[in-house]
Image (cartoon, rainbow, N blue to C red; front, side, top):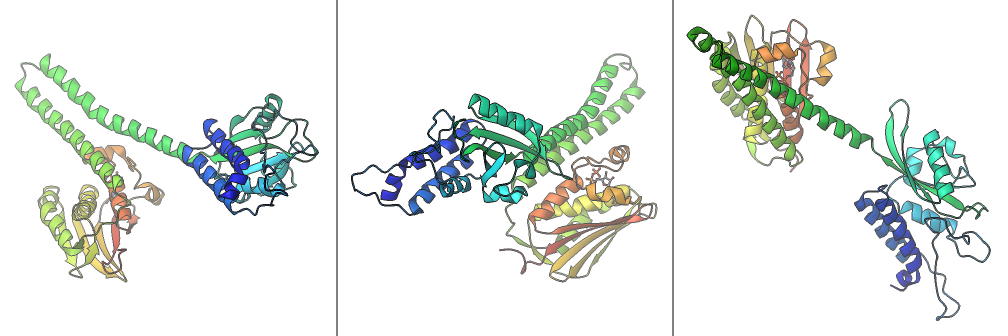
Length: 425
Ligand code: ADP
């Protein structure tokens, strides 16, 4: 406790530093609070140089954020030592670099060392070259105020960084004292997620708008030109019913996807038999297959095939794969479904002898709304979400989805799930 008391100024300064980053928008609140917590821990553990007299004031002043005082580094002042600066840097939960003497790296934390190839004493350009960052640093020095700048970094994979530049000492301090603190925040993932969300909403709206526009058009026609034409009415109503079916399939798939995503990180606990699930799906889809000129050939090589899983979700995985095999199957019409044991896992494979998939499409098949041919998928009642749902369910079950396909010859989709005794508890 006495250590904490004795370092109240350091802690207050450090805490102010962390919170200032938060206020400047440079750090999320949790990171700023983590920084404060780290400073408290450092202050509590750091050995104290005992004061000469027990009544003498003990203070460890921290440098100003705005650089308005001139005593940092000046004789007789008690600016933080290099070790204290390092401790403070390590307390910042993001890559951070202290600069002195213009653009020389005075100190940096472990996170910055991981991100950049630069060491203390080297020029900043070893770490990063960005005219925008240099301009922000000049501005921070000139105004004595923090700046935030967005830059890109990294070859060949470009990352988007937001850099908070904070003056930590007076312009005239000199003498190798740190002058600027740079804290880097990687915004790449955030931006990619935002883009994914925007694309998803645009795709979903587009998919719903198309059938809706068609239904609206037919309603208008039925109210006007086709009002007294029973034949046209019959035909239009059947198209409208098809389009309504498409919309409802899409909404069902969207809801399934969001349900699956919501608990994707919770491992299922129920123990169930994959072979029984395959039989259930086969019973249910046999009439659909026959209606489309296909037939199902079920071969259960192992029974029971016990896995830890969610019954409805695994049912949906097998249903989606069999429905695709029926949709994209070939003239021969055979859809083969097998259950086998492969080491510590059970494999359900669904094969067809249909149109097949060219190799360049395989890596993207499980992306939402990705379709080899949107027209073909729509004509066959597809939504473009079936395999995305399969992927999320398989992930939740700690399984694997494998696709082998040959254009014009057919495809085999295999789902491998850990046998229940090997599944994570
Ligand atoms: P969809 O509703 O369009 O079938 P999916 O997510 O289930 O959406 O599948 C994505 C795409 O993968 C399909 O549009 C189709 O191009 C391709 N695909 C899926 N299964 C097969 C298959 N058995 N044979 C050929 N192509 C398939």
